Amino acid sequence: MADDNRPLKYARYAIGEIILVVIGILIALQINTWNEERKAQKKACFYLIDLKESLLNTKVELKRVIDKSRLSYMASDTLDRILFHKYEIPDFTLDTIIQGTYGYTIYSPHSGVINEIMNSGELELFKNNFIRKTVASWDSRLNNIAKFESDGRLSFLDYTDLMLNYIDQSNIERNKPVIIEAKREEFFNDHKVLNLNFPKMRMQRILNDLYIKEMILIDSLESEINKELQKCNK
Image 1 (cartoon, rainbow, N blue to C red):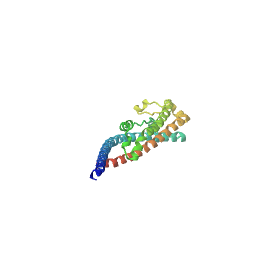
Image 2: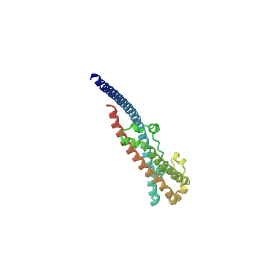
Image 3: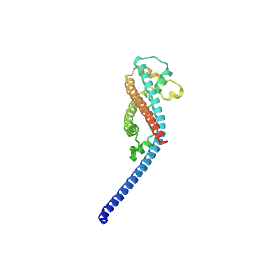
Image 4: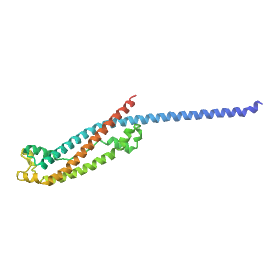
Protein backbone atom coordinates (compact mmCIF):
# COMPACT_ATOMS: atom_id res chain seq x y z
CA MET A 1 0.00 0.00 0.00
CA ALA A 2 2.92 2.31 0.82
CA ASP A 3 4.51 1.48 -2.49
CA ASP A 4 1.32 2.45 -4.24
CA ASN A 5 1.58 6.00 -2.80
CA ARG A 6 5.25 6.42 -3.78
CA PRO A 7 4.61 7.62 -7.41
CA LEU A 8 2.12 10.17 -6.12
CA LYS A 9 4.70 11.48 -3.64
CA TYR A 10 7.32 11.73 -6.38
CA ALA A 11 4.87 13.58 -8.62
CA ARG A 12 4.06 16.05 -5.87
CA TYR A 13 7.74 16.55 -5.18
CA ALA A 14 8.48 17.10 -8.87
CA ILE A 15 5.63 19.56 -9.23
CA GLY A 16 6.88 21.45 -6.18
CA GLU A 17 10.37 21.61 -7.66
CA ILE A 18 9.00 22.94 -10.97
CA ILE A 19 6.95 25.57 -9.15
CA LEU A 20 10.02 26.70 -7.20
CA VAL A 21 12.08 26.93 -10.41
CA VAL A 22 9.34 28.91 -12.17
CA ILE A 23 9.04 31.28 -9.19
CA GLY A 24 12.81 31.71 -9.19
CA ILE A 25 12.81 32.52 -12.91
CA LEU A 26 9.96 35.02 -12.49
CA ILE A 27 11.76 36.74 -9.62
CA ALA A 28 14.97 36.91 -11.67
CA LEU A 29 13.08 38.36 -14.63
CA GLN A 30 11.40 40.92 -12.40
CA ILE A 31 14.72 41.96 -10.88
CA ASN A 32 16.20 42.25 -14.36
CA THR A 33 13.23 44.38 -15.45
CA TRP A 34 13.68 46.66 -12.44
CA ASN A 35 17.38 47.02 -13.20
CA GLU A 36 16.68 47.88 -16.85
CA GLU A 37 14.04 50.42 -15.83
CA ARG A 38 16.48 52.03 -13.38
CA LYS A 39 19.14 52.23 -16.09
CA ALA A 40 16.63 53.77 -18.53
CA GLN A 41 15.46 56.28 -15.91
CA LYS A 42 19.05 57.23 -15.10
CA LYS A 43 19.80 57.73 -18.79
CA ALA A 44 16.65 59.83 -19.23
CA CYS A 45 17.73 62.01 -16.31
CA PHE A 46 21.13 62.63 -17.91
CA TYR A 47 19.40 63.59 -21.14
CA LEU A 48 17.08 65.95 -19.27
CA ILE A 49 20.02 67.74 -17.65
CA ASP A 50 21.72 68.21 -21.02
CA LEU A 51 18.45 69.19 -22.65
CA LYS A 52 17.76 71.85 -20.04
CA GLU A 53 21.18 73.43 -20.60
CA SER A 54 20.67 73.31 -24.36
CA LEU A 55 17.30 75.03 -24.04
CA LEU A 56 18.80 77.83 -21.93
CA ASN A 57 21.23 78.59 -24.78
CA THR A 58 18.43 78.32 -27.32
CA LYS A 59 16.37 80.88 -25.37
CA VAL A 60 19.25 83.36 -25.62
CA GLU A 61 19.26 82.86 -29.39
CA LEU A 62 15.47 83.18 -29.54
CA LYS A 63 15.58 86.46 -27.64
CA ARG A 64 18.08 87.77 -30.19
CA VAL A 65 15.87 87.01 -33.20
CA ILE A 66 12.74 88.19 -31.38
CA ASP A 67 14.36 91.57 -30.67
CA LYS A 68 15.83 91.90 -34.16
CA SER A 69 12.64 90.92 -35.99
CA ARG A 70 10.61 93.30 -33.82
CA LEU A 71 12.99 96.17 -34.54
CA SER A 72 12.94 95.46 -38.27
CA TYR A 73 9.15 95.17 -38.33
CA MET A 74 8.60 98.38 -36.36
CA ALA A 75 11.10 100.32 -38.50
CA SER A 76 9.52 99.03 -41.72
CA ASP A 77 6.04 99.84 -40.44
CA THR A 78 7.15 103.38 -39.55
CA LEU A 79 8.77 103.86 -42.97
CA ASP A 80 5.60 102.62 -44.61
CA ARG A 81 3.52 105.24 -42.80
CA ILE A 82 6.00 108.01 -43.59
CA LEU A 83 6.07 107.22 -47.29
CA PHE A 84 2.34 106.64 -47.59
CA HIS A 85 1.37 109.90 -45.83
CA LYS A 86 4.37 111.88 -47.18
CA TYR A 87 5.39 112.97 -43.68
CA GLU A 88 8.23 115.46 -43.43
CA ILE A 89 10.72 114.31 -40.83
CA PRO A 90 14.33 115.26 -39.93
CA ASP A 91 17.10 113.50 -41.82
CA PHE A 92 18.59 111.88 -38.71
CA THR A 93 15.20 110.39 -37.83
CA LEU A 94 14.73 109.04 -41.34
CA ASP A 95 18.26 107.63 -41.30
CA THR A 96 17.60 105.78 -38.05
CA ILE A 97 14.39 104.31 -39.44
CA ILE A 98 16.02 103.20 -42.71
CA GLN A 99 18.91 101.57 -40.86
CA GLY A 100 16.37 99.75 -38.71
CA THR A 101 14.73 98.26 -41.80
CA TYR A 102 17.97 96.59 -42.84
CA GLY A 103 18.79 93.00 -41.99
CA TYR A 104 16.93 89.73 -41.72
CA THR A 105 16.81 87.00 -39.08
CA ILE A 106 18.13 83.43 -39.07
CA TYR A 107 17.25 81.39 -35.98
CA SER A 108 20.06 79.03 -34.92
CA PRO A 109 18.92 76.94 -31.93
CA HIS A 110 21.14 74.54 -30.01
CA SER A 111 19.83 71.25 -31.41
CA GLY A 112 22.71 68.90 -30.57
CA VAL A 113 21.09 67.11 -27.63
CA ILE A 114 17.72 66.80 -29.37
CA ASN A 115 19.38 65.44 -32.52
CA GLU A 116 21.22 62.87 -30.39
CA ILE A 117 17.98 61.77 -28.72
CA MET A 118 16.14 61.46 -32.04
CA ASN A 119 18.99 59.75 -33.92
CA SER A 120 19.58 57.22 -31.13
CA GLY A 121 15.90 56.28 -31.05
CA GLU A 122 15.70 56.93 -27.33
CA LEU A 123 12.82 59.36 -27.31
CA GLU A 124 10.69 56.76 -25.53
CA LEU A 125 12.93 57.10 -22.47
CA PHE A 126 10.83 60.14 -21.57
CA LYS A 127 7.59 59.18 -19.87
CA ASN A 128 6.30 62.76 -19.87
CA ASN A 129 4.02 63.09 -22.91
CA PHE A 130 4.56 66.84 -23.31
CA ILE A 131 8.35 66.47 -23.32
CA ARG A 132 8.19 63.58 -25.77
CA LYS A 133 5.83 65.33 -28.19
CA THR A 134 7.65 68.67 -28.05
CA VAL A 135 11.02 67.07 -28.72
CA ALA A 136 9.55 64.92 -31.51
CA SER A 137 8.11 68.00 -33.28
CA TRP A 138 11.38 69.98 -33.01
CA ASP A 139 12.49 69.51 -36.62
CA SER A 140 9.07 70.24 -38.12
CA ARG A 141 8.84 73.51 -36.18
CA LEU A 142 12.35 74.52 -37.25
CA ASN A 143 11.58 73.71 -40.88
CA ASN A 144 8.45 75.85 -40.73
CA ILE A 145 10.39 78.79 -39.30
CA ALA A 146 13.19 78.30 -41.83
CA LYS A 147 10.70 78.52 -44.70
CA PHE A 148 9.49 81.94 -43.58
CA GLU A 149 13.07 83.03 -42.93
CA SER A 150 13.96 82.12 -46.51
CA ASP A 151 11.03 84.16 -47.81
CA GLY A 152 12.03 87.02 -45.52
CA ARG A 153 15.60 86.99 -46.82
CA LEU A 154 14.40 87.13 -50.43
CA SER A 155 12.06 90.03 -49.72
CA PHE A 156 14.90 91.83 -47.91
CA LEU A 157 17.25 91.39 -50.89
CA ASP A 158 14.62 92.78 -53.28
CA TYR A 159 14.15 95.76 -50.97
CA THR A 160 17.86 96.50 -50.59
CA ASP A 161 18.49 96.23 -54.32
CA LEU A 162 16.01 99.06 -54.85
CA MET A 163 17.25 101.09 -51.87
CA LEU A 164 20.78 101.18 -53.30
CA ASN A 165 19.41 103.63 -55.86
CA TYR A 166 18.59 106.13 -53.12
CA ILE A 167 21.05 105.73 -50.27
CA ASP A 168 24.76 106.21 -49.77
CA GLN A 169 25.79 103.69 -47.12
CA SER A 170 29.19 105.34 -46.66
CA ASN A 171 27.39 108.39 -45.23
CA ILE A 172 26.49 106.35 -42.15
CA GLU A 173 30.12 106.48 -41.04
CA ARG A 174 30.38 110.18 -41.95
CA ASN A 175 27.29 111.16 -39.94
CA LYS A 176 25.67 112.50 -43.09
CA PRO A 177 22.12 111.88 -44.36
CA VAL A 178 21.82 108.38 -45.79
CA ILE A 179 19.37 109.43 -48.52
CA ILE A 180 21.16 110.94 -51.51
CA GLU A 181 19.99 114.56 -51.51
CA ALA A 182 19.48 114.70 -55.28
CA LYS A 183 17.16 111.68 -55.09
CA ARG A 184 15.26 112.55 -51.94
CA GLU A 185 12.05 113.65 -53.69
CA GLU A 186 12.18 110.69 -56.06
CA PHE A 187 12.57 108.35 -53.07
CA PHE A 188 9.46 109.71 -51.36
CA ASN A 189 7.42 109.33 -54.55
CA ASP A 190 8.63 105.91 -55.62
CA HIS A 191 5.82 103.42 -55.00
CA LYS A 192 8.26 100.56 -55.51
CA VAL A 193 9.79 101.37 -52.14
CA LEU A 194 6.37 100.95 -50.53
CA ASN A 195 5.66 97.81 -52.53
CA LEU A 196 8.95 96.14 -51.58
CA ASN A 197 8.98 97.36 -47.99
CA PHE A 198 5.57 95.84 -47.28
CA PRO A 199 6.35 92.12 -47.89
CA LYS A 200 9.59 92.49 -45.92
CA MET A 201 7.64 94.07 -43.07
CA ARG A 202 5.02 91.30 -43.26
CA MET A 203 7.64 88.55 -43.13
CA GLN A 204 9.31 90.07 -40.07
CA ARG A 205 5.97 90.33 -38.30
CA ILE A 206 5.15 86.68 -39.07
CA LEU A 207 8.59 85.58 -37.93
CA ASN A 208 8.36 87.62 -34.75
CA ASP A 209 5.09 85.84 -33.92
CA LEU A 210 6.66 82.43 -34.67
CA TYR A 211 9.71 83.19 -32.52
CA ILE A 212 7.53 84.30 -29.62
CA LYS A 213 5.38 81.15 -29.88
CA GLU A 214 8.53 79.04 -29.89
CA MET A 215 9.80 80.87 -26.79
CA ILE A 216 6.51 80.19 -24.99
CA LEU A 217 6.69 76.52 -25.96
CA ILE A 218 10.30 76.20 -24.79
CA ASP A 219 9.41 77.88 -21.48
CA SER A 220 6.71 75.24 -21.00
CA LEU A 221 9.14 72.48 -22.00
CA GLU A 222 11.68 73.77 -19.50
CA SER A 223 9.03 73.78 -16.78
CA GLU A 224 8.13 70.14 -17.49
CA ILE A 225 11.82 69.17 -17.52
CA ASN A 226 12.26 70.76 -14.08
CA LYS A 227 9.37 68.65 -12.77
CA GLU A 228 10.96 65.49 -14.13
CA LEU A 229 14.37 66.42 -12.72
CA GLN A 230 12.81 66.69 -9.26
CA LYS A 231 11.79 63.04 -9.62
CA CYS A 232 15.35 62.19 -10.64
CA ASN A 233 16.66 63.60 -7.37
CA LYS A 234 14.40 61.42 -5.24
